[in-house]
Image (cartoon, rainbow, N blue to C red):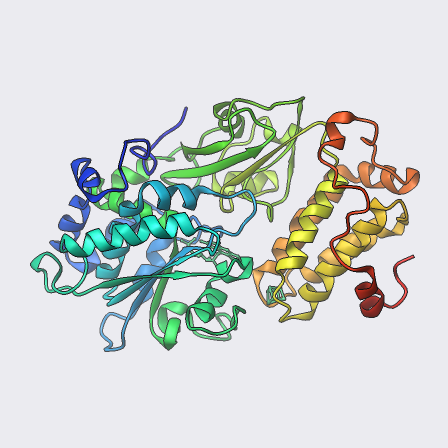
Length: 456
Ligand SMILES: Cc1cc2nc3c(=O)[nH]c(=O)nc-3n(C[C@H](O)[C@H](O)[C@H](O)COP(=O)(O)O)c2cc1C
Ligand code: SF4
């Protein structure tokens, strides 16, 4: 099927981040059209498009848009989630850096549709260059009359702000993001059905629409071309419509962002990225590090779609597609993944706070050649205790990959425990991926204090 560039179509045009160039390529036409439409008609177009959230969960966008009250007098807000913390994902970076006006236009249309007065673009702390580009785009949009009071004479007032995060993965979780935005500690809040949805009581307890940067960047295309046109893309899949940007990294020849139509075979995406380098394919993590790995044999006939990848045992997630070649030691990889989630756990709930650190401790014990055979099932047991029992989905995200590594590559863990070393220990290709000898993420004393004498 090949690459299908919709959001990334013009990103290589020189100065596309400048408003004059963006307008030359049709920019802000969708906003003009939207302002001439009834608000509900815009939501209907989003519904027809079949757009699902690109931040990870794939929730239908229109349901959120339609969920904000239509006759209250509270302020309404739109938030763009550009925290992009999921390892392996770097698509929002490119969208903000190279096409910031596309996002700004999407934010204004969303604001108009849900009767918001203010929008916030929450940008990951490390993405300083993106924030500068988006800042310039916002300033230019104000100067052109696309933001501020009485936009293009429509009577619609709307302001847009940037809020920089401080580099916390958890602050990408929508309720933690809203806490962070309000100046509180970046920890999640209680969710529906125990608490109201953000569309009813979000930021400052007011109705809030929160969508991912890629989701909002789709909006100008949906309005320009119509929801039905958009929904034709991906029509071969069960329920995935439009295009999706995958950030392909790892053992491929041409890592980068590739936009494809849903329904494209997974292996075709890898071919777009120049194919696997350095050996045969071992597995692919299609949707970011929190998603379960697909071993090579399952990748062969895998089709990219929300339901299609789920049937194979993984997920589209945020589109952080990580490719591993045959020389990758899965035990090391599992440890590195576990280490990330332990570091990013916010500490609010016990299963995730204690479980993620415990998993790192066990994996480090295995890496040091001191593992016990029962450690492998203990890891699975901890995954079961974290998954579905944590306060937010970071816990699930920490458990899923480790469980899938063990289920698909158990023999590598067993070999490591039996021999006290990786089954790739003598392979120079694999050694390049090992951490420096003696490297340890956490101070062992801390474990002894926390876990008694578990460490041998
Ligand atoms: C731990 C955690 C981190 C998340 N990080 C992000 C993120 O960086 N960007 C994002 O868009 N969504 C992230 N999400 C998902 C958001 O909570 C939310 O579902 C999303 O922003 C909704 O937008 P969408 O419907 O357009 O996908 C994260 C979720 C969790 C549990
Ligand atoms: S699962 Fe619990 S400890 Fe982990 S990030 Fe969410 S709230 Fe914090």
